[in-house]
Length: 263
Image 1 (tube, rainbow, N blue to C red):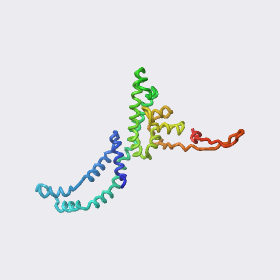
Image 2: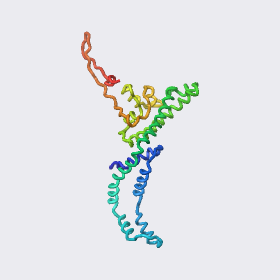
Image 3: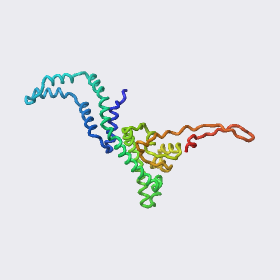
Image 4: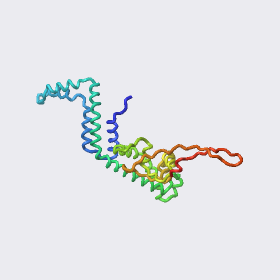
């Protein structure tokens, strides 16, 4: 099965951020519109030839329209080959048209994510989001509101990640999969790498990973384009054998976390 052409992938990426309110340059829109019109065109010359013949008021070059109509009868494979030849140049033109707006669009969506993250952090620090509904019944209004907001804001963070990551990729960052999203959305300075990844992979509770990350001390925010760094996974636990003293001297199996030394 053939994979998706990079042109179609790029168009889908731009559609994603456009739906989120990003600004799409007019030049991009004009090129994209012409490309879509081309793909959706079936037999315009043939129809124009028919119209010119049956309507005496139409002043047209019948020989030219006839030649174009005959060209439209080319085999489907020839038409596909022509479209494939065009995809590369069209992709390049669309990239060049979008590029001047890429950084601004990322900042727009990054600011939106950071605002949501800040609101979420305030809510989680106000009340334990995993408190039961029964426990919340006797809490002050501020605490009850924070408890209700926390789960909604956590869902919004989940929903904003794909758009944020798409805008980052369009702005030139290498964002490949869930692992890349951690560095994009979290400041983990000074924290134990393995604990951070454990929090990131939390899928329980009312706020899943977001509540676990804040509890750990992670600052939730969208990274700036020039400061983003991929946050690698922790190195594997190492096994060492340490000699023990005493009457029955020997070796003891000890598991060592190499990330402990890097905190």
